[in-house]
Image 1 (cartoon, one colour):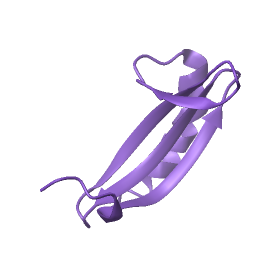
Image 2 (tube, helix red, strand yellow):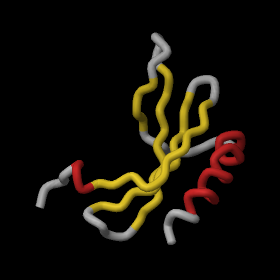
Image 3 (tube, one colour):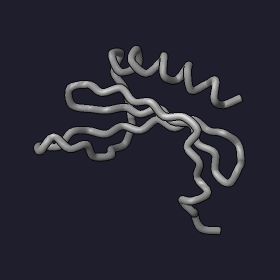
Image 4 (cartoon, helix red, strand yellow):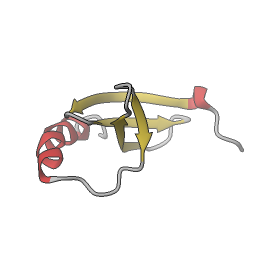
Length: 78
């Protein structure tokens, strides 16, 4: 069965924005299935627009910024 965006339900989403990056913490449920946490990184390009990039490693500043968001998202995983 191919992915169907209409079955992907966003239950929670909050973002933190730094100088050159934005990290978004979300909770999704696909087709009423288990709720799962998603963390996305977007970097600013030369025009100031955000573009999706691989999350990879995060800095201490980024970790400290998104930990409260992850804790808040955890309440939506119940």
